[in-house]
Image 1 (cartoon, one colour):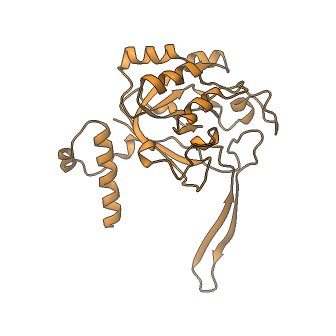
Image 2: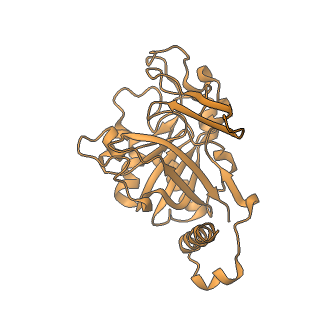
Image 3: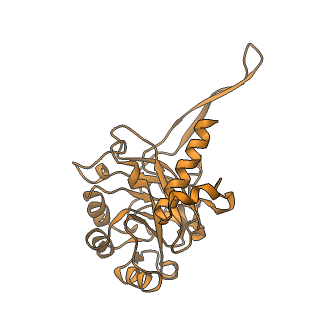
Length: 268
């Protein structure tokens, strides 16, 4: 019980710190309201979408039922690629000398969410990208992207999950020639790297680069800077443009190039 209470206090302290609050406020805050928590993670199961060249998620019960002593017991095993469903790209994914999933600091996974919407353009063009102009418009309306932010590109693509053909542009195994979905533009990512102090970027599609990309410049730029990226973010439409705190907690895989992540946000 003490451990659970301590975890709650630490979580609250983190939220208050990122929102510019002080520990003095802790006395009047006993818990985080469930209504202010948003689950941004897709369930991992047989419907989970993976890259066309990857195998699917497999979950198999090894035990399920009564034991010889009469009590119920269940356990299972699973197998899955590192990259698929709601997940993290670790720098090693596109950076020979990049950090692995287990080497990235926890501080890189929590921060104020700057949610930049380009869904209207994406609805008309599946190859649309979040541009530098989108960032400028966002900052003109909501203020400068805060230090330590996690930028979330909201394309509206989550409306197609788990329809693989509509979400990726193809549902054929191995078909990477017909991928179509939105992503970030290299120009926008260079700006975030060089002009803003951003911890991570995330997007509600299958990749930080748009589906029609052939050389993945965004992956090369962002992961090349030893920063993590998060893909297939669920329920991005429930996030406000500013004010939420986002937690992107990946599986800690030794030597991992990425891994499944449980992403959630606390609304203001």
